Length: 309
Image (cartoon, rainbow, N blue to C red; front, side, top):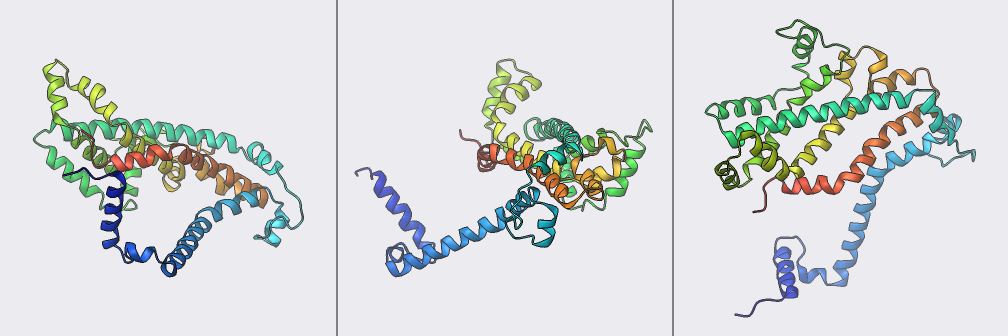
């Protein structure tokens, strides 16, 4: 039987896909169907662009507009004809945005390291080492996903206020943010599922060669898991960057607060144009990070269900 060509395989795939769709492949070739469908697709795309980029573009416009323009006509494009690029510099220097962004970066970096260490080690124990009590621990971790965060807020605060075993307080330290956020149940289960898909023959071969538990973890599991670890890292940084309530409770010293907590306080003493510029600078970094690492993020999400053999 002759092997089908690439074009024949593509036509067959399109035919199979059309059988599962509302509009068949033959109807798509008709001008009366293709033209309205194209218009609908363009309208949907424009709607997504407007709803997704519209707020960002408006914030950028407001950040370089005067206060009078923003208050008088918020949706007009520079009604007075004045573009205040200096708002960005004033927000950086006068409001101390650079200092608070540095604090936020330190918090996000520490949160990233703590999360990767805790999630990978717990997932490695449950997935590869498989102790007898592993199923009980996994069930307990899964159960925490059904507990609303607001319910454990008070017990968690009391734990930070008087650390069990030592009685010390972690208030006004970054450890109060790093430690509670490290054991994230969702990240642990996602990483464990990825570890489950790694062929166990690799672990057996490594043990035959004399590799111990730590070497298997560092030399085999971690290198193969870079896609999913990239996803966890990006999600952790984004969550740490936008967190507000918990840093507000445990970081009462204004000098060490992140940008999310500092912005509402700075807004009370700043004019509207400086507020908008501060918001834009705070939003710019996570957006740029996502645009830079979006390929690794999407690739990691696609591979989170398994590993190619």
